Image 1 (cartoon, protein in one colour):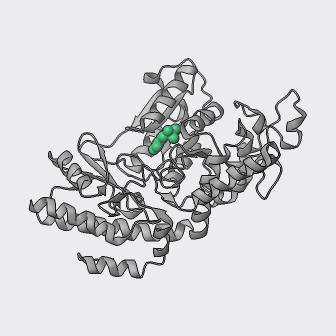
Image 2 (image 1 turned 180 degrees about the horizontal axis):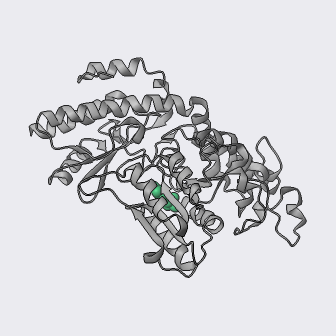
Image 3 (image 1 turned 45 degrees about the vertical axis):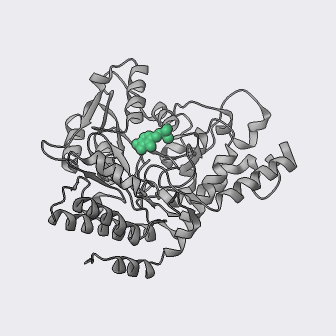
Length: 423
Ligand SMILES: *Cc1c(COP(=O)(O)O)cnc(C)c1O
């Protein structure tokens, strides 16, 4: 695709954007009386305007029906998790029984590892990406210790080659092959939070299974960003959060995928709670845990109605638009951003994009390694109402999100970089 560097060209792209009407369904933070240029949807998604009414509805339901609210109305609380299943399944390419929404991400990562990290003396290693998100590192280390092993013995990290920023798929696969017999679990992010690299989940899963390991993914930066086919790719489990690309309020609930070949295995060890117990007999309050079929059998507690009501509003939007349409726009938006940054580099800018430029290896996010004055640049952007994200030592991350960002936003971002260069 060929682009042009002008405001009128960007506005022209917005006029023919089939998703342009979505933008007004979100609240933008304000800067000097107008919408800020918001590029942190990879960190905290904007608030859909429809969420307030959904929360009011549940508050009213509680006020009016109190405990009877569990059984009354169109969406009785007793069955509330079911009202999120179809949309969650379509979002990640799963069957409805393979997904459930519950808890928060790190909690679910632990619950999944309880079931799918079953180390033995011979096979106890976990292969993960070097520089994974800290919560994932801590969860993995603590699980390893919990089983009586040492992180330094059990963790194998795959890192970029000398002088490179991204992982090569061939290196990931050869690491799995090399440590195959000792590896219990391969656990990767879908998109690395720092570089924005999207990994080849299908190939990683296939290779992990070939050596006899389980394979799971943390999709915090992937769900709602890229189309996924978790069922067909044969992934064992996955977890994601709902407040980044999925716009469902800070601390919003997490999604879980468990492949159907495990979901129906009632003998799989797991940490249990009453909401995962066979629904028909749950209120007999008897001894003896019998898990529900599918991912729902991993639920512990009754549903967090307010946060799930917020999440449902957003999931319904994703369901209506569909990931293919979002991805199509996302490729153009981020492609335009790359084009504009490269123009600035031709002009003497020092904006080194460390995210893979090949579209199939990234989602919406770009990570830009800046020069020594990176923090000053970041502050300049912030003062001008351009909201991005700063990561030490020198990286500005930004994500034009197809749900609500437009080409004009992207053009203005580059224009402020341009003004910075001219200063
Ligand atoms: C955002 C993020 C988390 C956050 O975990 P919470 O339990 O939701 O606080 C964890 N892992 C990754 C990879 C993330 O991007």
